Image 1 (cartoon, rainbow, N blue to C red):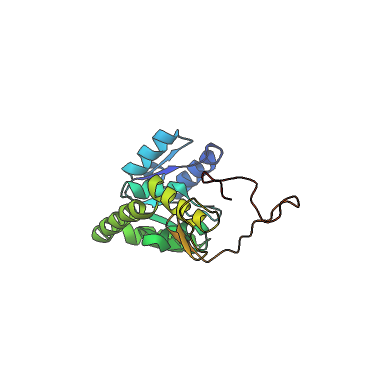
Image 2 (image 1 turned 90 degrees about the horizontal axis):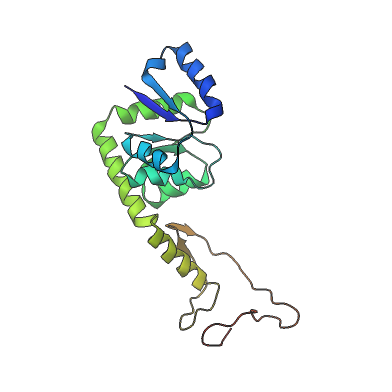
Length: 193
């Protein structure tokens, strides 16, 4: 098997030395920083996208790879990978700080082409259902209706789906200024607040 990795430029020399030490340097291609276009193209060429980060706020890189039908492996306990997995699959989660468990998961997936193909189809479907710009926009607008009055539409507080993620109700209260308590300082098109 041939493996490719996109790594930070400052980590590349140490990783290349480690690959030589382990005797796998001829099987590993370490690429440094890529432009956005190059990074997306590299993700699309992949068989499996692996990002075992322990500090991922959301993980757009997972979604970009999954949009191309490339299944992903992320870390359990991280908001981004957990939320992407909960939204619909296409991503496998491993324990953080467990290189042997990560290697076993990667090997298991690469050794099972049918499972890998099904996971890739699930990845693409998950992104199409939950992580497109249009879908994110619609979900954000729906959630904002619970907080702000939108002319002609007032949505009650409750649980709303945002970016494909279901979050419990958040208690948001507008605090007006003391000149006009409780009334937002803006007017909507129908002149109501």
